[in-house]
Structure formats: structure tokens, C-alpha cells
Image 1 (cartoon, rainbow, N blue to C red):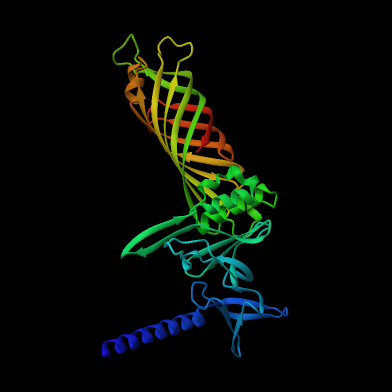
Image 2 (image 1 turned 90 degrees about the vertical axis):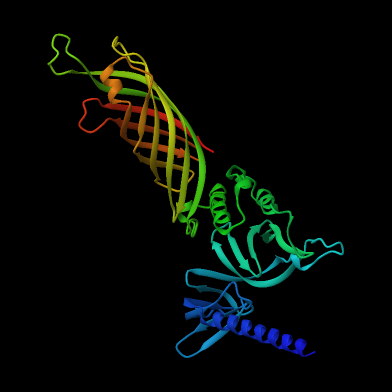
Length: 392
């Protein structure tokens, strides 16, 4: 009995401590902000709100004279730092709280009024709410609706079990509500704030609600996306090379020039970064180029395998955008050109890449200039080409 009482006291003490700490944190999480009350009054000051606490149905504001408490019933909206919260009555998924007699979860929602954080403010908004897990809400045909992803860790017979039920239901809901956005590859949208936010911002553009540059918070957090890239193109290689003087062993080599049309084909890993209305990418490319010399009996065909790391900056986050590219390639010659000095100097060749192009969704076309050659050496290649490709 003594053990029972002691355990009970410990549990009560811990519970009270946690609640007091939670309440204390909620009242001390102050940031600049304001509250617009239900009567239309605006109160400016230090606002305290913790969206992940058990008391996230209350917001506090500290003015010069007092600290006041407000709830979902007497607030139109409020700002806490840079975040804007609105009270809305929504159906919140509570599935793990209701278990069938067979031990399996059945869908279960609760209608309640909560403070939703405005993730994206547009004609197609995205909202966030947290109780014991994250919830995301969109504006559907019948009002605000939750994007549901039912995946839970539960304890059953002292074992941790992953229970999934309609884990990707949110993707089906997005497809159903926004059919004009199927080209945005809904099946790749992850159930997290960054991925959902970027999808909703692009989807709003598809429906004609402005551009990404004027949708608030479209890219206020950094997103990193890995893509595969494949490309092919035609080029023109204008180069210099050296040949020995035939009538003297001591005379300097003659510098001559040649030209050769060619083709280039390759692939790359594209590491794309989206942040604050800007899109940048690092590209690790590997390609093969082949050239056939024109009207030059001295030269045979020759080719290169080129590793070309480069940096790409898009001028706009829109679906259609121009871009600039700069890179530092390293090429390895494949085959022999039959010109000894040329083959010797181009066995391994560093260079620089400059590119300018246009990207539309996954497709791109660019003009590319490669200057390949070692500093101070006579043998240089100046390659101009047009390349088309696709991101996957």
C-alpha cells in the first residue's frame, strides 16, 4: 500500500510539474506581434503562443500595463513573430484515439475550433495545426479539409509496431481537389511542411492565382531536391594544335588551327535548392563528346569523356525561367587523333563552362561554351554548342 501511495504521489508531482512548465513556457514564449480581437480592436505588444504545447488554444499578449489572455472564441487572428494564426473550426483527425474491438484503428475525427498557422496565404492556402502530431489543412470544394496520412507507431504485446492505414491518402486528396496540378507529380509530395508548401504554391500558379514571386512564404524554407538529368546536343569545336617542322629538328613546332563538328550526350545528378524565391542547383555531369575534323587530312575523329561539375542559377522560381551556368570540367581523351602533340596535351584537359538557357518545367535548352586547355599551352579548344535535356 505504501508503494502504491508513493508511486501515486510521484505521478501527481510529475504531472503538475509538466503542466506548470508547459504553462510557464507558453507565457514566456514572447515575440513581437499583435492580436486582432473579435470586435475589431488591434492590440500590439509582446505575444506569447506555443503551437506545440497542451495550451495551444490560448494566446497571451503583454502590453505596457498588463498581460491578457485570449482564446479561439474572441480573436479574429494574431501575429506571433512572423507567423500568422487564425481560429477556425475544423475536423481534426484523431484516429489513434479510437480502437475497434479487434484491436485495429478506425477513422475518427473531432470537430473543434483551433488556432491554425497560415503556412501559405493565397487563394489556395495551406494551414498547420499540432496536437500530438502535425495536421495540414487545405481549402477544398466544401471548405477546410485535412490532408490525412495515417501512419503510427503503437505498442502491442510489448512490441513497437508500425501501423499504416491510408498512409498516402493526402496525395489522393490533393489529386481530387486540384486536378489542374497533376503535372506537379503529386506522388512525390512528402507529408511535411516544406514539400506540401512548395506543391501548394506551384499549384496556385497553375490555377492562375499569381506567380511564385508574389505568393507569400512560397519558399521561406530551404528545400533540397535530387533529380536526374539527361541531355544531348550538337557542337562545333574550334581548336589549335602543333605540328613539327619537317625540314628542321631544331625549328619550333608550327601552330595550326582546325575545326570539327560534333555531338555530346550525357547525364547528371542535379542537386536543386529552393530558398526565398530563388532556385539554385549544383550539377555533377558526365558525358561523351565525339568530333570529326573537317577538310583536314592530318586529323582523324576524336572524342572526350568529360566530368563537369557546375553551378546553375535560375532567374525566376516560375515554371518558365531563364538560367545561367558556370562550371569547371575535366576531360579525358578517348581514341587517337593521329596528331601526337594534340593527343599528348589533351590526355587530361581542364577547362571552364559558361552556359545560358531557358527551362520550362522539366525541359531545358541552353547554349554552352567550353574553353578547354591548360594555361600557357598552345593547344586550346573552343567549343560552342546547343544542348537540350530533361530533368527527371
